Length: 142
Image (spheres, rainbow, N blue to C red):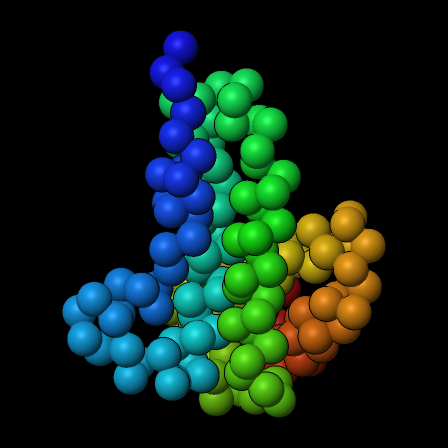
């Protein structure tokens, strides 16, 4: 079995779009609330893929550190979501148009359920507000 390199695994989960945008010298995109919202949604959806690839490589070793990695990863994207400020259709609708209502709701529900499971209820309020807002604006897309 391969020996796990904790720093490399953390890097896989910690490097986000901002780091990529910075490397490409286009970090100004991260001032756009539409981009931030889309990044949060896609990143939460991608977590399971990243997790499975690392689990396949490192098996039980990864399972031991996965709860810490998940907490850091989800907390990072919660912080990005909270940086957007007020829930607004203008920064939500492009992501819904790109990946669909169901995927957006799935991503936000995943984040909400995670914070409920670790009893960080103060984080749940913002996420719930996003879900409620989207369900109110897009009632026929359910």
